Length: 302
Image (tube, rainbow, N blue to C red; front, side):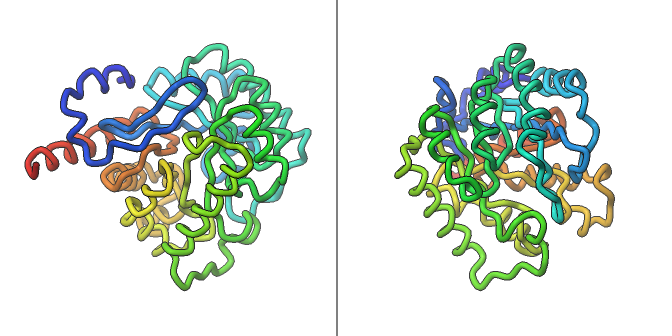
C-alpha cells in the first residue's frame, strides 16, 4: 500500500482537517492530505533501545530499508548513534563508518528521501554527500555550532527536536512548570535560529520529543495536545515502541506494537504531519483508518 494508492483513493482528502502545512525535501513538495507521512527507522547501532545490533551489517540494513520502502514508507531515517536514556556518545569516525555506506547504497535503490539522524555537522555533511536530504537533529542544532551552516548551504531539510537535558541524563527526574508552553517556546526559538542561519522556513519540521526528558504524563499530554504545535511548523512525532508504552502496558520493547498503534492513531487524529515508526506496514494501516475517521467526521460537521 504505497502513497500513490492512498492519494489516488482520497477524492475527499480536502475534508481532512489536518491538511494544510507544507514542507519541502529536495525538489519535492509535501503536504499532508489524508494520512500522515510515515518515516521508517533504521538504527545502525549496537545499543538502541528497540533494535540495537540488528542492522550492523550494511547489506542487512539496506535490505530492511528496501523492505520499508516497499511497504509504503515515505521517508527512511538512518541513525548511527543511540539516543536512548543513558546512552553514551559515539566517536565521529565510528558514526560515519556506520551510516555512510548504508545511505550511499540505499539512496541509489529507493526513490524516497533519506534522513540522517545525527547531532554532528560532519556526519550530516557526509550523509548529504552520500544521498541523504534530511537532517534529523535531536538537539535542534545546539550540539554542533556548524550544523546550521551545513543544513543551509546544502539546502537540506531539518527536523528540530525538543529534548530536556542530554541522552545520558534526560530521564533523571525531568520537571516542567509549563510543559507545553516551554516546548512551544523552545521550538519557535529554534525555528527562528535556523531561518536566521539561512535555512528555508519551508524546509523545517519540528518534533516535541516524545521520551526525551519527558515524564509518562508529559508524553501523554503531548500526544493529546499535539495540534497546539502545528502553528509553529509541520510536526513530526516519534512514539514508536517508547518506554511510556511499556510502563502503561507493562510489556517489553518487542511487545509494544499495539501500544504504538494506539499512539499513532492519536497522533494522526491530532494533526501529526510525519510519524516516525519501526513497523511501517502496520502503522500505515493504523494511520489510514484514523485519517478516514477524521475525514468522515469533517464531512458530517461541514
